[in-house]
Image (tube, rainbow, N blue to C red):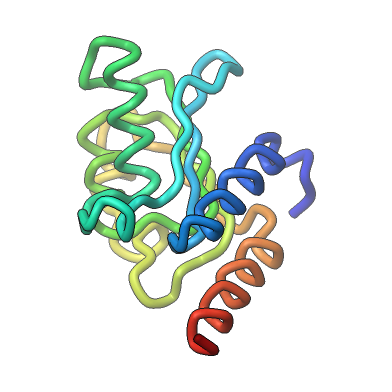
Length: 150
């Protein structure tokens, strides 16, 4: 898919560079409301030694703090990699209205496989995947290839 379908590509790309430079898996997330980015994060699992410090979780927490509420009904989340089950559940619990993700994650991705709660909740969460998939997949493969070479 093209950049026009994924309007926050350059911001996510910059966040991914920051993550990789910090030794983190390059996965980033943005939360957008009314065409304004209200939260931005990249993975911090290694830095914080916290297995829940995924980009999506961090961005959701930031957005909730900024808005002063646990619900983000009118928000969309943009993420470079298909969310895992933990992040999918956090998206569900926070009532995010739409998920846009880049690369599919065949190992632990959860959007197109077992995300029934997102689809059955009223209103259902909209799910769109495969934006800039080649770029984000290549970025992850390059990161892991570099780690194996160390």
